[in-house]
Figure 1: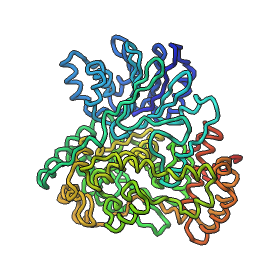
Figure 2 (figure 1 turned 90 degrees about the vertical axis):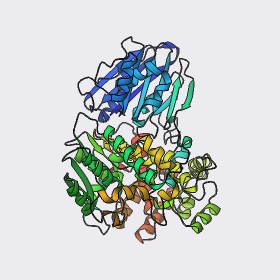
Figure 3 (figure 1 turned 60 degrees about the vertical axis):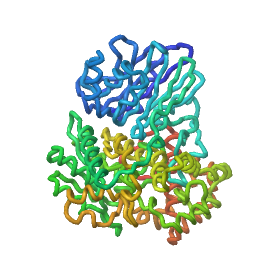
Figure 4 (figure 1 turned 90 degrees about the horizontal axis):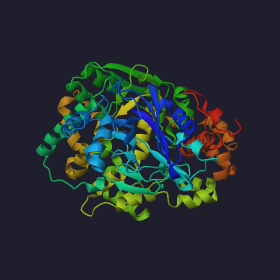
Length: 609
């Protein structure tokens, strides 16, 4: 697990070492164990390393023995042992114990076809000097991030947006459509990011950049390639057991200890079961809840699962002020704006776990793969009504996070225009699905290519990597994803119950009665904090933020605060404005500032603060 960055220059110019060093500095948190720079021709590569596999022999960037290929990689290739065996038979012998070297050798053996053979979470840059081309590749599900920037003289890339900002040559600008998507749909999705000109490499995509900076895009994996299956229940249970076992066995490969985030729900409990069954031993596990709030938590359920499997468990009970003191740092860490309140406790969990560990397992992906979300099983009337009001995506992902009243009163002209297209990523994803897919499969696939990589996995990657902690997500082994998406609907949803097959697999393996407990989710009591004098103070500071004044009608903020104080809604809108104000200060007004993990968010709202 690492941070990578670099660029390819036009007309064979030599990369500037000082620029590469500056990019590496912005990614130091992702790789505190080692740092490397490699310059070859017109290409410069950077890696900051968090050592997980091949601790003493995995220095990067890596260069092939003949000097033709160079690599900077982030993530893990879980099947590197099996891949290396096949490569040895072809005469390609690893010189290190690093899983990343298997990427270099696999490309030498198979060319672009190597991507089909990699299993894992990764983003990498590979330069082929003989063909004078740079490859930028992201894993199938987008577990690991990769961004790029096209400039007149170069194309640059990095694991995080903040490492690309110094190369812009001017003050960063906000991308209107991405801002509208964040405000109304919780996150921005697709190629465009919140910073104009900086784009995402998409999940399952390879960018091929030649010496003239021309880009050819190749999608080497897509959920749309998955054909529905007709498995019966017994066959499906047998395949599920095999996939869970094989995938977890590969995910457990590490030369350092690992732990587990336990939410108290089904997904993390399944991971706990598999870790214990495959000999993980008395590993550390972690869960989080809150003091001084009426909001329910799952600390008791998590403790029960930890005790059942014999883990060394830490239950964190957080004060609200402690949680919300994470806002500035979590905005900085994420790069991208997301209205996922769970980023805040996740940040605290990550910092706690990182004191002893470099790797934790987490249950992200289980709901998407096995259809656990309530939004996957609407009533016919609900589906019909939403589809009628919001056409294009079967009524799915149709409700905006902001009320129409506050959109009309607060959005400036440019933002109002962009808001009309905020649902477009969901519509595009829905419309792309095969005709023989069910409504449920369309909902799953839409989330797989939008909410999963651009929201949920941003939280998992950035909140953890901000503290040099790697998150492993076994449910997103692409073989398990293909299996889950292809399953017949009745093996995923029956009546008002989701994850039918996973529940059947788990029931005899988990503590008695665990599956009967209601799912509460991973919530944060924002309403308890964002009220009274706090709302008023935030409102006053928002009107002193340059970004808020530019993009919103700031004269309406006082009315929003009054509505919030009178308990007439407004919490999402006010929290979103606060997030944007802090982000604008960190990424637009004064890029390069780094908040500490615990700071008063009010100190970071006003541009003149």
